[in-house]
Image 1 (cartoon, one colour):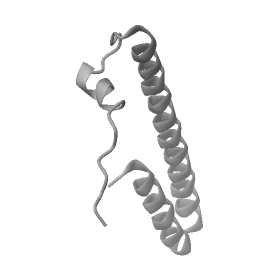
Image 2 (cartoon, rainbow, N blue to C red):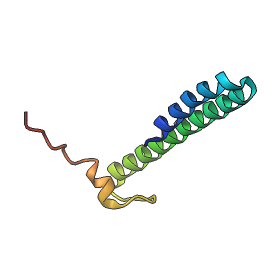
Image 3 (tube, one colour):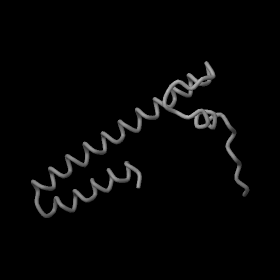
Length: 84
């Protein structure tokens, strides 16, 4: 299950708890929202790190970070076309 889906599920579950006890539900909802924001922030940061490494590879031809050469090179390969 993806992190975003997990965050959304936590938010949904917090609504069910909110009906039972307002204080617990509100606390759970706050935690779910903070977890969702943290997950989105981390996913965005990881995407930026990969794009910076990809740019570095495309301009210098060398992998400088913790990525494998094959992973970076695969970003430049054409995608396989599906048959319809």
